[in-house]
Image 1 (cartoon, rainbow, N blue to C red):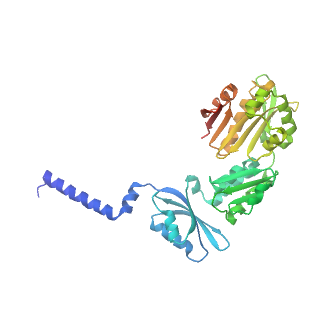
Image 2 (cartoon, one colour; image 1 turned 60 degrees about the horizontal axis):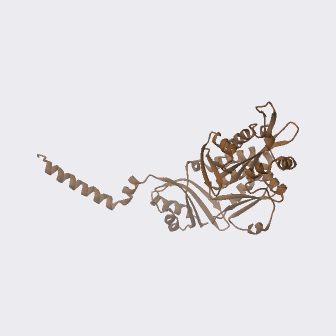
Image 3 (tube, rainbow, N blue to C red; image 1 turned 180 degrees about the vertical axis):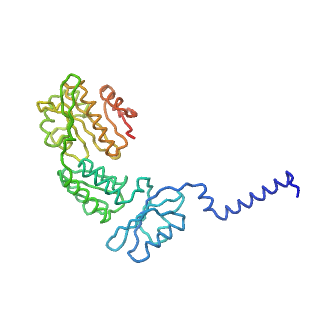
Length: 373
C-alpha cells in the first residue's frame, strides 16, 4: 500500500479522534496526567465499630488517593481517624470520607515535614522542650500545626471561663501562670491533650540553667560585659537601667512610652514564655542593655534598649546576633523590628545582621522585616 500525504493526514485525524474519545470516557486518566499529587492531612470522626476505618480507606482508594500514614484518636464513643495522604488537588477528599460515614471532616495542606512518623517527630520536639523551656511555646505550636495558637497568661483570670471548651487546652506553667493552647473549630483529642501535658512535664524535669546561657564579650573600648539570659530576678536591675535612660531612648524602644506601672510591664516581659530576653551585665552588676525576641504568631519581634552611656559600644550588635541565632534555632521564619524612620542605629543593626531586610513605613512607624530562611 502506497502512503500519500492525504492518506497520512486522514489516518492522523482518525487516531486523534480515537484518543480524544478514550480520554473523554476516562476523565481520571487525563486528570492524573495533568495534576501532580500534593500532600494533605485528613481528620474525620467515625463510629467506633469494626470496619469503619477500612471503609474510609476504601473510599479514598477509589479516588486514587495514596495513604501514607494513619493515626487513630479514641474518643468516648467514636474514633478520630487522621490520615496523611498524597492526592491530586481536585480529589474530593471530604466527599470520600462522608461516603464512608465520616463526620466533622477537616482537610488541610501538609508538607514534607509531616512525612516523619509521629513518634520520631514527638521525640524531636521533646528534645527541644527539654533543652530549653523558652522553646516550649514553639514546640507546642509545631506539635499541633499552624492553625494552633499558644498564649501565656500571668495568672488564671476571667479568661479561664473557656477552660471546658473542647478546642482549648490549659496547662499550668511551672514558671508561673498558665499556657493556653487553642485551635479553631477542631477539638483536641485525649491523646493530643496527653502529649501536651507530657511535653510540659518533660520541660520541667529536664531543663536547667547551664553555662551556655551566658557569654563573655570584650567591647571595642576594652570593657567586658556578660551577655546572659534574663528572668524575673533581674527586675530591679532592669528597672534601674530604665531610670538611667533618657526619654528619647525609652520612646524609641517603647514607641508610646512605658505604662504607668513599668515594673508590671517589665516583669511580664521578663517572665513570659513568649519573650526570649537577654541582658548585658557589667562587672559591677549593673545592666547596661536588654534585648527581647517576642513571639508574634508566626513571626517574632526584635526589640532593644541600650542605656545612653553605653550606646555606640556594640552591645546592640551582640544582643541582636544572639536573638537572631535563637530565632533560627526555634524555627522562626521571619523577624521584624518596629522603630521610627529617624532611628539610624536600629535601622543599621537590622541591615547589618546578614538578613535580607525589607522596610515599610506606615503612620510614622517603620517596620523592618528580616527573613531567616
